[in-house]
Image (cartoon, rainbow, N blue to C red; front, side, top):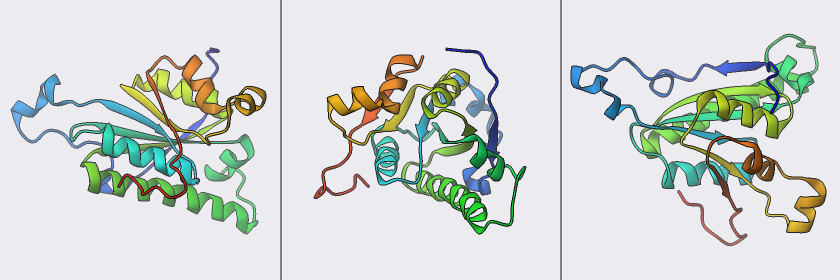
Length: 186
């Protein structure tokens, strides 16, 4: 994997869901209470939401930190960071939708699993950007959804989950899509 620089934007989440506060008690400063880092790749789709739900129900514990990452192309990244904010209303909708998604997921993670959340928007190729972020965070697991395509279509068209599975330094959990009649895990 290349060591190229990549651009990112930190999302400021509301206070109870943002970065961890300093421990209030002396006994809470030990390494034992730290918890794990869990990285979840999210987008605006239902398959990604299902993977997020699976992660907070089956993987997260109270002391963990959930890292949400959303990857966008260069032109969309410039819009999100305010570099090229044109008068196009679609650009403003993209910015608001992405930040709203991250805030909503952070609130849900706190309510369901009582975990702290950090969120970042990354620029670049989706698989490579997710693997670079995993190398930076060194999470206990990377959780990613999949569209559930057949093996032949995945090989011919490629898959972000498959790319991460083969190139990521962290353990990768690929959550299959739920069947059309199945209930959500939450």
